[in-house]
Image (cartoon, rainbow, N blue to C red; front, top):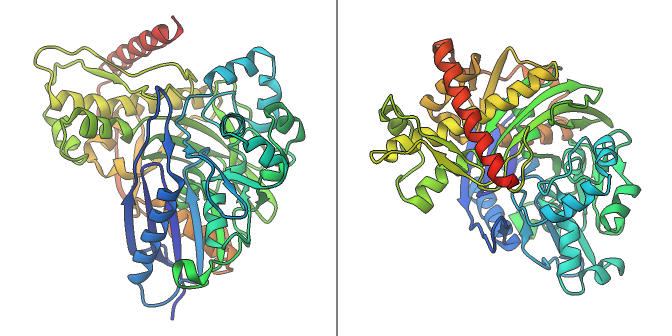
Length: 493
């Protein structure tokens, strides 16, 4: 039987499992949503058991769709989200704190005021923000009764979602993560490639609870046959945005992709040397293979597809996310409705955790069509802000590769091309996050011998070229900037 690869893609709002052949073509897929929890303003939590059950369920369903057991398994995951669990039982001690969670904003402000920002950025490439994992772990250790004492006694393990899944999949035999996930915690020195003792002390986190850090293609153990019904080697792990960059074959310095899921994340490969942004972008790892790190610049937008979900689930003006393409096309041409979707603060390049969403320019006849267009355009305009920061850092792209659920929407992708004034390429496989995890598993299992071999499999399904008057583009962006300034002004008041 030909080799196949299974990828577990554990995302923010759903878990997905996909089986691919070695040419990168999907053979089977299954997806399952799980609940989101909002216990207080700016707080976002997940039930780790819901994450686990949905992951196992989708994996079993995908495996049932193929004739043989895959050669290897890859994991990709929502980054920065953290769990602490009991080493003896594997039971979480609290809900997972999600990357969108803003409860540690006051602690981040204290750390910034104490003058530790330079140390954190120099060691990790990150800024001080509740987005990252360190203050989340601190909060759990300080607010779950007995957690810190138990951690000091060696009773607890902690990690990002990949670590939790690896622990469960291997029956508690492996506590590990990969370098890309470690690089998002604010605890990992991206230059020395190890947990940083000074940062662990700063955040009050005992090193004993953290996982071993491995390459993105490595031996992460083997699945317990009692879990998935088969012993499958786990050979690839990466955070979701890095996995998407791998699925998009962004292997050369300057290669860039943008993923549009719950949030939007732009990653540009910068090669073997980290580049420190002067415009509030993040320096991070693209991947680490054979002990050699490859670096990237990243811009993070917290709300992308989540704005459409808000219109569908909370406002009730959409029956499905797919409606937005038709509704946006039917919106009044003279409507000037702008949505700044800062539901959980604003990410790069603003980094305003206290900002909140706003809709500007509504009139009495504003309806679902105008709101749909505003939600999509809000994501487009945020992407433009990221690209402006990249250009200021000397990394202006010549084109853009896109992926994620939102890019199935032709209207949205065309508006991206129009506003960015770039050609936008959409690949044949939109689920590049899962594909990237599968590629890493294939590398770890020896199915692929080089990144060039993987790169040769990438294909564009469609190319969108800009078709917007320069004056129109400038007017729209000026109006957007005024709305962002208003949101930031309110947040600062």
